[in-house]
Length: 149
Image 1 (cartoon, rainbow, N blue to C red):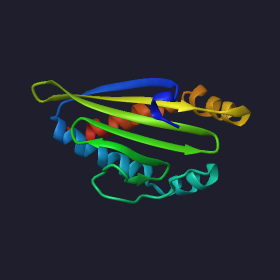
Image 2 (tube, one colour):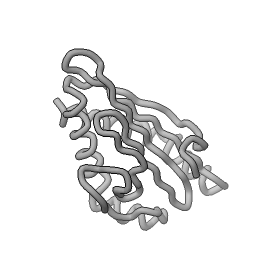
Image 3 (cartoon, rainbow, N blue to C red):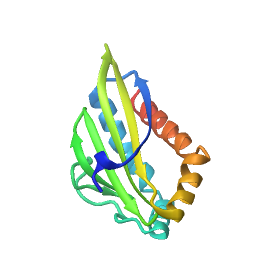
């Protein structure tokens, strides 16, 4: 499924007291560590993710994979697009990075996802409806901010 056709879920943003080069490095490292934890591999098998392990170039580049994700676009210091799919959902995360002033950057994370069928609808309620997705995104952006600053 094309990313543009995935329904928009939400967007989260944070301002980081660091330049875009530092934020980019922290973003790619944080994603690599967060999605490569031991529980991620078990989860990706459980839901039937297309990409179940980390592979490809590091730092992340187009074609790299993380458990549950494939890097579609990687424009250092500007944009990182991740896409994934499993039995219950097709989804994407689009990170955009921009200069926000002297020594500051703005990092935005846009989420898109489709949840087809009854099982997909139930999964959406579990992940999005409970607020789990929002908590996860806020924690991820906070981790990037801490690592950058």
